[in-house]
Image (tube, rainbow, N blue to C red):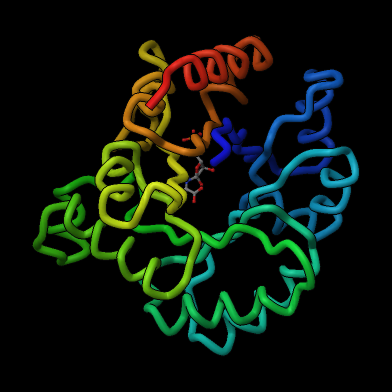
Length: 235
Ligand SMILES: O=C(O)c1cc(=O)[nH]c(=O)n1[C@@H]1O[C@H](COP(=O)(O)O)[C@@H](O)[C@H]1O
């Protein structure tokens, strides 16, 4: 199982993204292209970053009826990305449809993972706004087991649930965890957070880090610090 730091490239344009990534010189971090960048630049930004040698997590968080998700995944399969995601709340049938869609690709398919509960959601919002009256941990575990039943490769969850997800779904079921903050960072809109070192100790496979790197005075140093904290710890 590879462990890696994924930088969330939440930029509005290709120009800003390339300016940011040029600071890394010959180093090619694993990057996440999310809705902001994809909706502004389209599939060309995926091709460009792929050509530059980056591994890519295409984070479009698909959540629709199974037929629409399946056909969309057929399109995404041809983009040759390394990881894509859907919302587990879309149901097992929708997640199976996503898997079928990606399977049109010959050879190695991207990892297909499901968002359980967003790391910006806390227990109060879960109960009072989403009307889900169960413990966050149990809800994430329930969605993770649905994702596993649908044949997905893993989940997006917070680091707080990663260990239990591995216990319930297996050590090789991938945990991709945003909600990462240095001890000194602002929380911003994230609620269920850990530092890179803590995330490593609870066995997260990939950490997704945006603002603590992209908004840092020295993004390359912040990235290196993340990698150092995350990879020096063993499970
Ligand atoms: O699927 C995601 O990537 C995701 C799921 C989740 O539960 N929480 C979450 O923050 N993310 C993404 O991870 C990134 C986190 O960014 P920062 O909060 O700036 O570190 C953002 O691009 C979010 O869209």
